[in-house]
Amino acid sequence: MDIKQIEAELKKASNGLLMMSETDEPFEFYYDEEHVANNLDTENVLKLAGMPAEYPAEVVDLEYFFRNMTRPDVAGEQQAQGFQRLQATLHELLQDVKVYRIGENRITVFILGKTPDGKIAGLKTVVVET
Image (cartoon, rainbow, N blue to C red):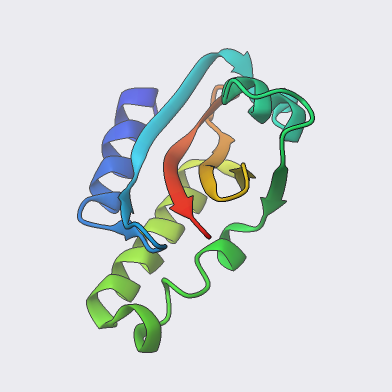
């Protein structure tokens, strides 16, 4: 599957979904053709985000990150199903998917994995936690 197909599938899966936090933010497609995914770690994601190495960052599993959004009792039935489909689509299209949270109060979130050709792709959004 080429990057245009991956982009189309991720946009379709995230269409209409908003990242729930103090501000509900959309998801946008992210692709880095300059770096290979074997360099996908917190240090390199900070560079991709344009942040210094000492900037606050953490890595979490996708299931943990989406834990509330995939629950019908928290997100509502339709939204929960949408987030479950998005989670499944990310795992289907990308290998080694991880969530990188960059920052403290206004957190830039990269949901990234490896494409079949070894590039870095996924989604980007923002979470506000005050």
